[in-house]
Image (cartoon, rainbow, N blue to C red; front, top):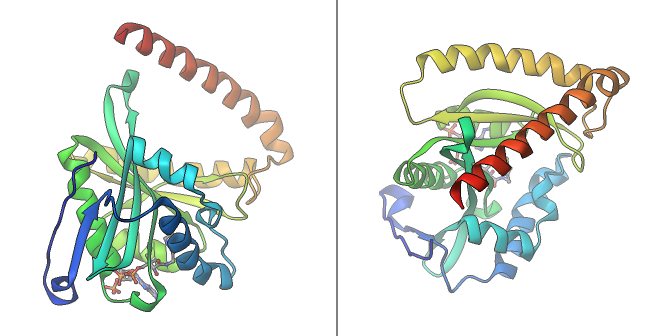
Length: 236
Ligand SMILES: CC(C)(COP(=O)(O)OP(=O)(O)OC[C@H]1O[C@@H](n2cnc3c(N)ncnc32)[C@H](O)[C@@H]1OP(=O)(O)O)[C@@H](O)C(=O)NCCC(=O)NCCS
């Protein structure tokens, strides 16, 4: 993924250029840029996990996905860190995870993140992904509005250690999805109740979670790692 892409669009977008894995932007610059952008929600009381980003994380993203930056002239005004993952039955399909995306606080509210998101969604289609997904905090209205506006729908709720909020996962399919949308509507509501029953916002298990969810998660991860081993053995 070392190809460099470039895209021009209209309005402010006329000044914006988008690059994939630009060689002139260092890992450390991306780390500092992301931290600067995420200071804004942090001051408003939401410390996203992106605040803990380091250069190893950026390297990992580069190896398996891409760092996509939006520039006005030489200045980076936004970036998106995307990850390509295997998914589906026997991991036969691809999906894209928008792991981190942010806009320089000076340039927010100008439609820049919408442009960057539609750019990375096009990348996902080119990579034959079945769907893209993105997560945010359940109490981040800006991001919930933004994801819905970008055509994502509510998919699941989870709670991860290292954060102090319930995470809401949004998904956007690249195939005819009438049936899946209905199924996921049910799944969202079900996961909402399940997660709040079994986990606290900091990812720790409640008493019910310890008794019910922990053993189920253990069985699930054992099955998944067995499947992964089988798939790996088939490939080699
Ligand atoms: C969230 C963020 C990426 C939005 O970037 P942006 O370029 O300002 O967003 P856009 O101008 O493209 O707006 C897209 C939509 O987001 C929502 N939105 C953006 N700013 C908003 C605000 N201040 N209040 C409410 N909704 C807002 C709106 O639905 C907006 O659509 P609209 O302009 O048609 O109403 C940016 O504010 C940011 O980087 N925040 C800090 C980091 C962060 O929260 N990243 C995402 C973590 S999940």
